[in-house]
Length: 117
Image (cartoon, rainbow, N blue to C red; front, side, top):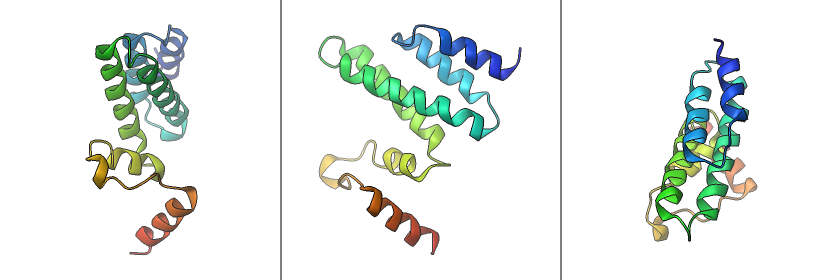
């Protein structure tokens, strides 16, 4: 079966369930072309973030699983997209040591300064 077909089938499942979103991430990881996999990783990241917030007060165990899944999706995106790199680097850092919300302007300035080094 082709990778695109596996991703399509995984995406059709009920993505409010952790196991199905995890399967979708595993299928997306099989894609060797990042341009084709990017929208899937971003979709998985968004789904996991929404689910972790929705379940935070009712089912903390599932919420933590979605939190970790969002982290895995950010890791898949980080080598290619600077925004996700910044999110991933700050992920487990203590709140007082985290950079404040990185605005688009600051992100572009950071990116310019890093690439000029």
